[in-house]
Length: 261
Image 1 (spheres, rainbow, N blue to C red):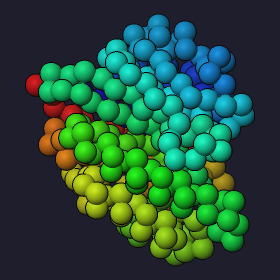
Image 2 (cartoon, helix red, strand yellow; image 1 turned 60 degrees about the vertical axis):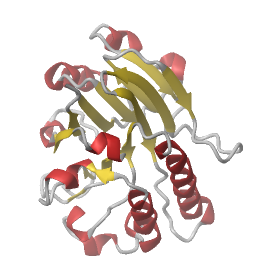
Image 3 (cartoon, rainbow, N blue to C red; image 1 turned 180 degrees about the vertical axis):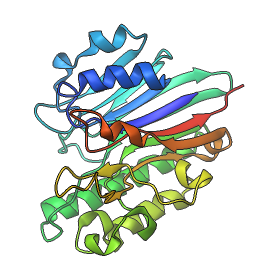
Image 4 (cartoon, one colour; image 1 turned 120 degrees about the horizontal axis):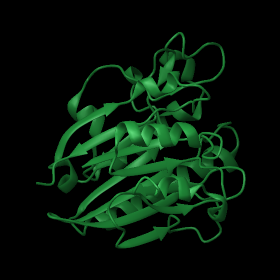
């Protein structure tokens, strides 16, 4: 089973790229972030025509997450618990039946957190990550295959940036941010890409200053797997070539292959 995460950076602006990629890559489950669309305006017909079931958690103009799946949903949960006042659409969980039991897949879009001097930005990011850690600990107790996939807006290690020194004052590379991600992993999650590769590879290149042409990128899109999911891992990759398409997102799909037979 091929599971992908992709920050699409506006699904209506990238629908042609999305459809082309779905046909080319043939993922079974897709986690999208930054759909930037309310649920009723999501271009679901184009995607359903390719054989996908579609579930969204959107809002107008920014944020928004979605799950596309060739497997029928058993259950869908929207919004990260823990803060009833948080109205930002950043979290959706789908539950699926497989030959090896339940599979839970989350599409998440962590806050950027900049500027770090502002509590409503950086503080919100850290509080959101703490909520995610608490939620994930509860889900791990179910002892099911669980994948937390999405744009984490976290650069885990210096190797995950072409020029890490350029990010020392950015929320994506702060010690508190990286520590929050490590705490999540210490619960028992495995970074799919790092489980199979120690190479330097990126999932994001800014639109500015020729970042793509200079390969000045960072790896901030991750698939974290519970022990039950990690035991099924057959491979992981990054589909870098998508960044070279016309009207691209500034992110590219990150992939995990799971073996269910």
